[in-house]
Each structure stands twice: as structure tokens, then as C-alpha cells.
Image 1 (tube, one colour):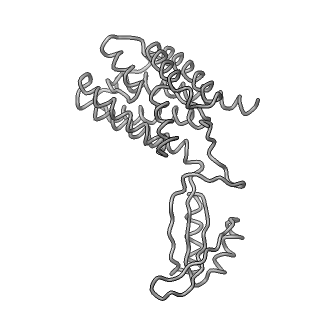
Image 2 (cartoon, helix red, strand yellow; image 1 turned 30 degrees about the vertical axis):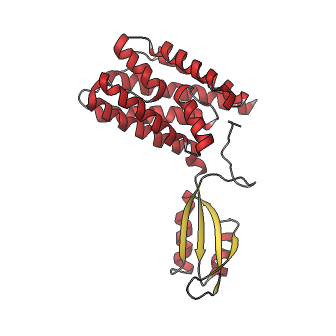
Image 3 (cartoon, one colour; image 1 turned 90 degrees about the vertical axis):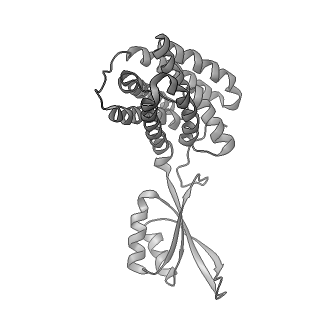
Length: 282
């Protein structure tokens, strides 16, 4: 019950932040967005249709179409999000004012707020329906990140919006969408951002002890062989957080400055002891 309460709070707060990004920064400055909300904004510019109503109808239709691809819990969370978003889009309507000629500033803040809102929603396993439903599909079947998937979908919609808001505002909208995609990835994946590190050194035992005692991380020793000398060489393999890279670098500088190190991004980890990304689309 406590977990569910936290999730619903995130959906509520994320929907509010999202609505602020649209009604306070995007619409007053004649910017658009991607996906369904982009279509919603364009319909507002053309026909003055309520963004809250249009968004609710379109998102509801799309989530009904894609409901089989998601778990019952995700569908419930998404329906709750659609309602929250529509309510906040209605409540915050006409809150914003144009920022003069500073469309870039408006685009940056629109992307920041929209991305932060959607990121919070995705983080607890929900979607906002519409294009985010397609993004979840692309994440599940293509392995793309949510932010990347949203970016592809959004660019397509933005290109179509050029005929309504013009080339200049469409380019500023692209800035907003790009910022939003980065913020989404940071919120959804950033807290669990892991790095796979491989270390080749003549002082492996000293490094291994430092990793175990100083960093408190388990280490795997792999068997390797030099391609030129064919000499056997052990390789240290360790998974660390992004924030622990500096600590690792200091250890290597102290123990062996000549160590050969490679660092790669880790998409997901399935193991006890690591905080796994919660995938609620299964």
C-alpha cells in the first residue's frame, strides 16, 4: 500500500509538472511538442480546441489500442496519468505569458518541465498514453531507451507542425524535445546508471584488494591472453556506479598509473545486490 501511494504521488506530481511545461512555457510562446501532445497543441492553435479534452480523447484511444502489450498495473497507472494530465492541463490553462523574444529560454524550460514530468511517470512504470505507448513498444521490442524512442516519434510530429508554427518555432521545439528526452533518460535510467569496467594491470592483487575494501564492490577475474605475446593475463571485471568512476580513477592512479582500463555503459543488471530498473511492461 505504501509503495502504491508513492507511485500515485509520482504520477500526480509528474502530471502537474508536465502540464506546467505545456501551458506555462510551450503554448504561450507558440512552441509545439512531439507525439500526441504535439497534435493537441497544433489543434489548439488551429481550432482553439481545449488541450485537456483533446489530449484525454487521443491518449485514451491509443492506450486502448495498445493495452495488450502492457501489464494490468501499467494500464491502470497510465489511465490514472491520462486523467491527472487532463485535469492539470485544464487547471493550468492560460497560466503562462510569452517570454518576449526569448524563444530559446522558453524551449529550454518547456523541455525541462515536460521531460521531468514524463520521467517521473515512466520511473514508476506508467505512461502518458499516446506516443509514450509507442515509445514503450519500441523499448520493449527494439531495445531503445524511452528517451530515444520519444525523440524519433516527436521529430516526426514536429516536422508536420512546421506548416502551423513556422520553421523557426519548429526548430526551437526540437530543442525543447531534445532537452526533454535527455531529462527523461536521466530520471528513468540515471539513478541506476552503471558502468562495466575491465582492468588489465601488473598489480592486479593490489587493485583487487582496493576494489573490495575501499569501494566495497565484488570483482570477477577473467582469464585472458595477450594477442602479441600470447602470455596469459588475468583481467579484473567490475560493475560500478557512474559516481564511483572518480574513486576508481584515484585508486588506479595510486596503485598503477599504467593500468589499461576500458569502461562501457550497462543497459540493465539482473542480480541481487543491485538496484534493478523496475520493468512493469511484462
